[in-house]
Image 1 (tube, rainbow, N blue to C red):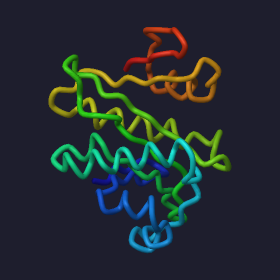
Image 2: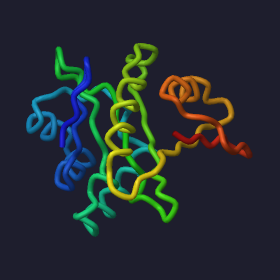
Image 3: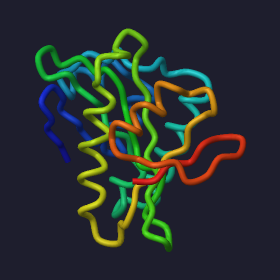
Length: 164
């Protein structure tokens, strides 16, 4: 699936494309005709992607809720970031969104543009009543993105929880 915004093409990755992202980025770049310059594939981020790949393989009917979406800048086909829904809608109709951007692309509005589009899509899906997100207490850039997208704080403990 592909969503279009003013500056971005937001493309969901298939299970096979997730596997390529983990194992062979250059092959994935060739397949998608893009250049990956987003978050480095290492550490905790890489573990998250591996986990989502396994879930996507086991639940192919709900892959859009488990996979990642590449945020591809239209004018040069550079992958500036990625985003995902962390699971299928829960019993309360909530889906959680997560996202990350390559350092060199921060403070350009790309993530706000992508989060708005992804939330708009999610809220049109059956069984979805709200989109939620979690930010670190000190994650001010991420908090500003959520505020610009219309999210409101609803819980604060070791982190801040937001709802749209």
